Length: 605
Ligand code: AGP
Image: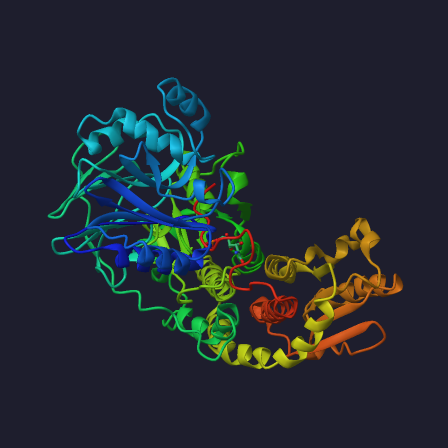
């Protein structure tokens, strides 16, 4: 999604800006641009192709400068065309980049037109540029502060003005922005990752902050305009570009990294101890009577899976909500409920807003399950558990999901123990099963050749149905999401018992029905549902635990999974669904790691 990089230095910073954009590329974007200040004002290059194309333009056009801003755009207002790409100029004096959405842009645009400003883009961003320009009286910092007071919505911005050659001003509200501190040079970015290689000292700006970067320092004020002292954090270099190694795509690499990611995420301790979730977690866990899980997309499905664990193991009532729905619905807050936000990136706008909403409603206990330790979500919650998936590049989340499941199972077991529902033997058993998971995953990954054979068949279909029951219904949902996201095949998931209440009408031989079939208490029920499909001529593609004894037959294709893995079975069963989606997408020739219209980190509402 949109990304910002900015810099003030004494050297040509164009390569730093381009490198920053390259590091943000994996998030998904549809245009990009860079602007630098020269003697006659800002000049820019913009591209609706990749950052590599922008780099070529910059080189050919000899674009150079010591002060600059750059951007990757994921279109919200206006198509991905050059005129809408950032940086956006105002009267060739001011350049601005923006992440987020300005909700009152139409009113502001009318007001600014009345003042003679001409609009050349369809973006909401252009109103910010003209608004700051209209308020500029020789002090960019002051003009930005005055302008943002009139903005409704979410933003992170970086702006420069021709009359202040060594200044970049930034502001944030609802979208992340970090300051990178260098020696005699300073930087700004929407993610510290963009500045890896340039600095390891960062200030994570808080909501409402405005900052001014100059050569020798950074000034920050808070929402009230008071000078703000923000902690400088040392963030170790994020490593260079992640290598693809022997894999065709990052998604494939990340699927195969899951045994390692899970090994790194499983708590080292020999017991399920509250301290795994941070200081004071024991007290918080003793205080709560329920859980409210908030997340989006794949992270939401990990929450749905966790509900089964939390309610069956710990007997604690658990509600799971899509963050973008929760934030706007009138709910009944329970201050004794622990709010759990789940996110790979920790920067998803809807989940952050839902967290804030819950806090405003009086929820005092919050826990983040997140893959990025420096993210806003981790900073804004009382407790946290970091998954150690490592950087996930593919837009389709894989290793982040399975590591979230490990974290959530750990949470369920910890709460079960604290509530006297887990004896020593059971605790030792679950710990042992967790430790054995990477090996079990390796045996599932070895099924890849059989899944490739199925994917040829799937690549010729336009629709698919996924079925699961109980603990594996969320896994069916995740399998369908993976398939539609990267292969563009329309896929739906249902709890198998719901078939007869509607979706059975869709079943024909042209609609493959993928079935998640663990050897659990619902197996016989699931088998009846499979019969319902067969009776209508539907073709079943079943991932069955070996001990289910389900075997190939007419219209019944079976891939045998290892023996049933008990409560942790969803972590194994999702992997073949990831592989099926991946290989189907490859067979259809889609851009697997960067599927159309999607972004890795969804930082707008
Ligand atoms: C998963 O494959 C998706 N690309 C998407 O649903 C993602 O899980 C969602 O946007 C939430 O992201 P987060 O985990 O970073 O909050």
